[in-house]
Length: 450
Image 1 (cartoon, rainbow, N blue to C red):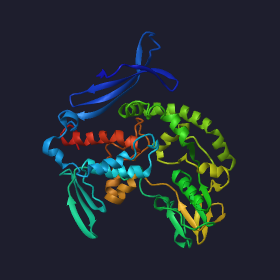
Image 2 (image 1 turned 180 degrees about the vertical axis):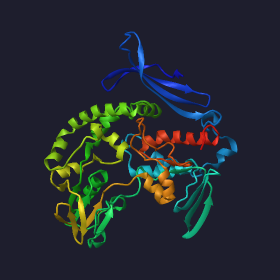
Image 3 (image 1 turned 120 degrees about the vertical axis):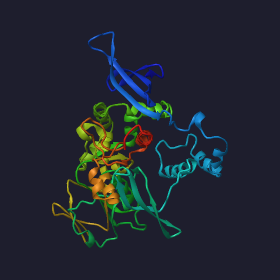
Image 4 (image 1 turned 60 degrees about the vertical axis):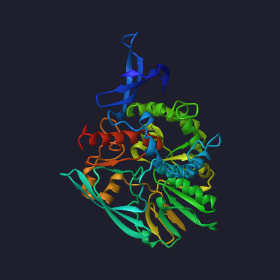
């Protein structure tokens, strides 16, 4: 283990530390790391490690085919022949006009380009229709059903590993105690995952959104922009921060044009143990909420209940614990404080009626359209729908923290051999995709057991 650059003095919250990147090598692989040193209170001239983080990046003898190991000659001729068209599409986003927040169209273009550039075999319009794990052969038997030119085609494959990368959470959650769903006679009743856009020429129609996290706010604002009378039902509380405050308070100077290289930024960001990160986030969240106090006080004044995350630790810890319960404000909060979007706080929905909803306190709310922005189930429920009860019950809970303070199950062994859960935002996926791939590679070359 050796440092890869000169150590620097920096701040970690209120703590002064010496930070150094590390090069790490074992008999099986190579990687990077980061150490933070603090003065030893017992010995004034000495320093001791406050955090030590290491991350595997490659297995010896099975390195990625990059740099000098890239394919040459006829191997390179397999590249996409339409590369100029694809390259021009990427060039459209170069320069000072490139957005600082990723937009959906750019992400879609990137996915399309990525699959071609990496020559990934992507099967669209394909469903996993049956599966069986063979514990003796240590492999799956899976039936994949595709529609090709509107003709059904079944294929049977035998992978040793399946990665469930179906999103941050599981299936849409509709509270089981809401009755009367089939009795609604209005124009639309959907879960937020199936909402596309408001109806046109709908000025004056009544829209009710049940739920007050990101989806609920975005849909409420979309309805308002299309002329609807909008009501949001907030059943519990929501963490709210403006996007500017969140970026400045958590990522400023780290993920930025004038910041360190992305690989270094990822190591800095991911190297903090979760309990340490939580303590830092408590302080950061207090400062961010103070900065947004005008907006938050306005929300409180109209009855919208705001929280500060688990133990006051803010948005990211809430994200890791439950994957929701927050709103990064892009305009809807001001509409709420203005009274333009109506708020009903602290009430659940007892029943759907023919022309609206009945709340738990007996209040009836009229509605032409209802959107249930009521969140999602665990990823285990998606596994249950795809692989059955036996497989799902053998997996561990996903997200939240285990007894060691590590994120549960995601990006690591699931509890069932050959099944992995993968998800998260772009930064988490960028960092942990390699680590999950290396775990699988280590199994396949005999360094780990399946």
